Length: 132
Image (cartoon, rainbow, N blue to C red; front, side, top):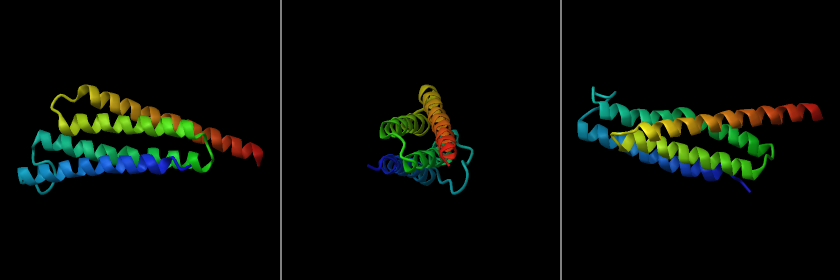
């Protein structure tokens, strides 16, 4: 069973929502480039950009683990946590004025996924070298 494509697909759907938020905000504010000095536009841009900065690396680590035949239960836990994290973070920045909880929780959970996935990749690499 392929686990990473499920979460990649779900996350890309959320990325498209965040992208549309940026496009609509640009259109309604007449902002062609940058944030136009609008703090709301800046938040929407950062919600979108932050996703683009962190999610690809997390999915790459998950794919590496999956290709090394790591536990699908661990992969689902990482994927689900990443999905919740990015929903919280993106919603907080792109859809609300009061974004402290979602932003902090989303960032924290994203870092946790990256940290755990990185450790698991290192662990898999050490196991592979021992068997060599």
